[in-house]
Image (tube, rainbow over the protein chains, first blue to last red):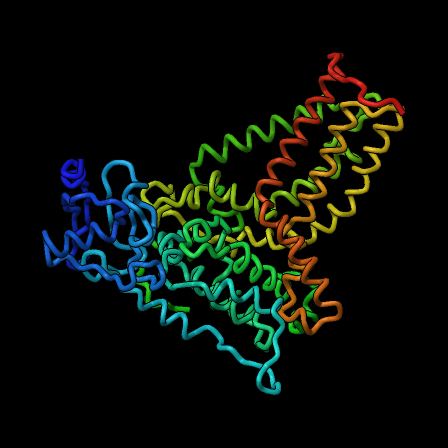
Length: 245
Length: 243
C-alpha cells in the first residue's frame, strides 16, 4: 500500500515570468504526500525540478504573510492551502495587483509607501504606564492580527482592476487600529475620506472573505471608518461632535 | 494621493467622474435592465391591485400607507448589506472574488461610492425614518389579534414579520456606529462597561445583518402574498388560540 501512495503524483501549473510583463504557465509533476500544502509542492519543484523558480516564503505556518499567491484564481497563502482541498489541477500564479519581479515574487513596496502616509499614532498626555481597560483593547486587537500578506490588497477590485487612488483594505485596517486606540488623539476621517479614497470601496467584502487571519475587514474597519467619515462630511447633526471621541 | 501604481489609459477612474448619471447605469447591462423591468412590474401591480388589509390583517407593504414605501425602500437601498449585493450582482463590481471570472475590468469606468453613490452615506437618515415607522407594524400586530379576538396563523405571520423587521432594523451598521462604533474609549465614558456590553450585543446581530436583510425581505413578500391569497378567498387561515 505504501508504494502505491508514494507513486501518486499531483499536477501543478506554475506561472513563470522574468518580470518583463510576459510569462506563461509551466506544468510540473510532484509526488503527493499526506498533509501536503501548495507551498510544499512549489518548493519540491524548486529543489528537484527547476532551481531557477523564484518564490518567497519564510515560516510555512501562516504567520509571516510571505507566500501569498493566487491558487486556482483565489488569492490565498500557499502554506495554508492543503493539496487535498483542491480538486484536479493546481494552478499557482503571482498576485496580479502588484508588479511582478520574477515567477511568484511580486513587488509589494507600494504598501510600505502608503503605510508611511497614514497619520501616525499620537497619544494624549497621560501618566505612564498607561492604564487602558481590557474592553478598550479588544477592538484594535483584532486589527493587530494582520500578518501583512496583502491578499486583501490583491483581491480588491478597486486596486486590481481600476488602480484607483484608494489605499486598500490593509491600510484602512491600519488606520482603524490607530483611530480606535483609546489613547490616540488624531481624527483620521479627513485623511481617509480625501487622500485615502475610502469612498472608492463599495463594500463587496472580498477582502473580508479571503483574509487568512479572519479579520472582519469590511464590517469592523472599513464600514466603521466610512461611518466616521459620514459623521464629519455628510451628516450635519454630527459635524460639531466629530472631533470629540 | 499617488501610490506609485502603474496606470495605463484604460485604467482611468477619472473619466467616470463629472457625470450626473453614474456610468454604471449607462453600461449595456442586461442584469440592471431586467431588475428595473421586474421592479417596475411589481410596483405597477402593487399600485393597481392594492390589498391594503383583509379581515383586520394589514399588508406590511401598506403599513401605514404605500406612500412611505419609497422611504423604506431607500433604507434598504442604502443598507450596507444590500449595497454589497447590488454592487456585486447587478453592477458586477466585481461579481465574485475569484480573479479570473469577476466580470470587472480595467476598461470599465468606476467611481465606487465617491460619485453618484455618495447618496448611500445618507443611510442613517433613512434609519431614523424607518424607526419612526416601526410602531405602525406593532399596531398592526395588535390589530390583527384584536380584530378577530383570536391568534390566527395570519396574525402569527404578521407578528414574526414585525420581529424580523425590528431585528433587521436594529442590526444596521449605522445603528452600530451610534451604539458604540464611534466611541474609542469606553473606559473614559459614563457607564462605559454597560455601553460596551450593549455595543457587543448589537455587534452580534450586526454580524448577521446580511442574512437578516434577506430573511426580512422574503418574509415581507411572503406575508403580502399570503394576505392576497386570503383576500382571493383561499381557505388557508386557521385559528391557533381563541382570546
